[in-house]
Length: 191
Image 1 (cartoon, rainbow, N blue to C red):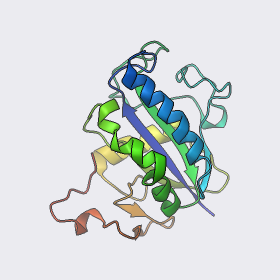
Image 2 (image 1 turned 60 degrees about the vertical axis):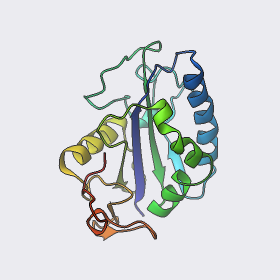
Image 3 (image 1 turned 90 degrees about the vertical axis):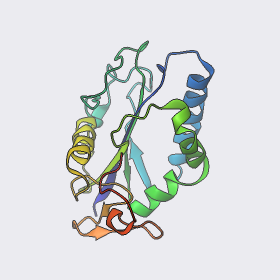
Image 4 (image 1 turned 180 degrees about the vertical axis):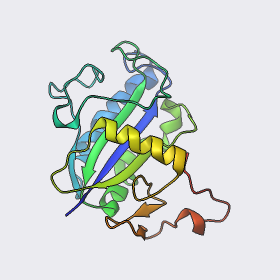
């Protein structure tokens, strides 16, 4: 049975190593969110550095998740002191479970504060795609899919919650969310 891969990417207003209150707050909330997400029904796994050090994104050993990668438009630092990004790569059983995990509880609270911590980039901040059972998506896969979504809009290859697809490539929806073409004044591409 296929699994759902989710890649998220955001540019922080200040580096993760910054001792400013907002950066510390984001980092602390992020730890709690990760713990809650890992207990959510439908959650399978997420990319974690083999040595467990989240501060060393670019130099870390990510095991089967591959070498850490970011979109080409990310222009901030790449060292422990200058990295100003948050990225996740995870696997889910289905779209409904991922939606529920993202839009409820502690993650929803954090999502409501995203513009306190993140810059508005004009690029999508998440992308989904289906992988075969047993396949571990890589960071490069996530970047490639996010770029595809930005450049071409949603497709079975790269999609969002609002414009989603079943594993067989047919359009699907989560109850209560309408596809972009059904929303008045909407675009087919999320930013």
